[in-house]
Length: 260
Length: 254
Image 1 (tube, each protein chain N blue to C red):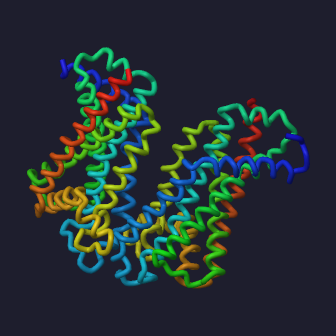
Image 2 (cartoon, rainbow over the protein chains, first blue to last red):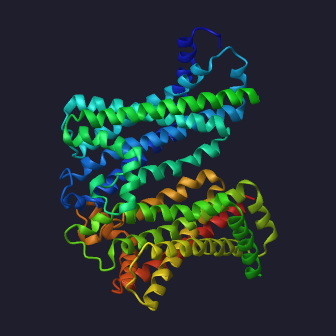
Image 3 (tube, one colour):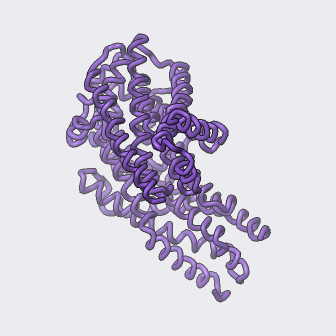
């Protein structure tokens, strides 16, 4: 790879990242199927929750449709991290280190695959959800905002995957992060709105969990209408995670290149 | 001879499980996590019209998590079998053991031990969390008896897959059908409160009988006991045949 301008470097690595993602059905298929399966099961099994006083909609499918976007973002942690860990394990990163490639180009380029996967996932979840009968009160602009939010969260979570890969250098270690992230998802307002969580400690933890507000941003578009506060919170949390993830990944990259 | 082989295989598997935090911690933490997420996060479901489970939502979810941990204890033992084949250790078992059926029995004993560790922690946590238990000794024996049979069935299922695939890449094949059949049962509410396609599927899902019977046991109001034990006894028999086929494949592969 020639040491051209930053956009050229990013472009080259982005192309590789996107192609690698698209050529691995084992990465794409579970990321699409698993969240949709859980959506089907949960929207069927928890339909009666809509009878609870204060439940925001009479369609549990609409309420639950926010969850696949978050689960899809969790898969991006695994995919982005595992791909980079494989580059480390196979020595590809060491070879890149011999070129004039900038660290920013490497990290940004690697996230391109997560962007593409995020787009595919968001479009699939939304389309399947709407076909199955979910409501979307904000219409087409709302659908586009949902896709933008989903991609933002996917990229933000992907940056954490990059950090984990650079820090550990092991695909197995990155994979082991998956359950940890699932804890964040499960102990949130995933299944019921915050104000209907009756167990005190669970309510307290879910209220402090940023995932609850990311879900809230999706739900505002699906159920309530344009709630700029909820959207600002959702995009703001995604941006904060991205900044933290990229900063940590940059520091880990420097350490790893020094090690090699 | 079978007994000696089984005990040797079981001892090694149990030792690996108990001495390696990477195996021990997830086996204990994941069921607890599901229990916390379901019993804590969904407790408001107990307030929906028609939900009248006498021992409360914590006990209602405890039964599901107990059976789930029983099934996944078996599946994770299948992962260990697959790993043994990958590193060549299982082939040494096949060479050394005169009674090869004892190898499968040994793995099954290890899975049961693993499950007992998980169930002990899970039960203590549930009781500390205030779970109401309406059932008496015999009924609770019935509940844990069902869990034992589910664990044996899941181990034999996963062993059958592992001995056919002989690679950890067979993990999703062991895991996904188990996950699917568990979550297509009445997980969050009783069968009578389900409607639509999920009700139709749950009605014919054998796991539904196990769940309903287990919930009956814990609340002290036994229900569907004969059906549940018939299902729970039939599954290990079917999967023992499946595992025997897998063992023959592994033997034939050299």
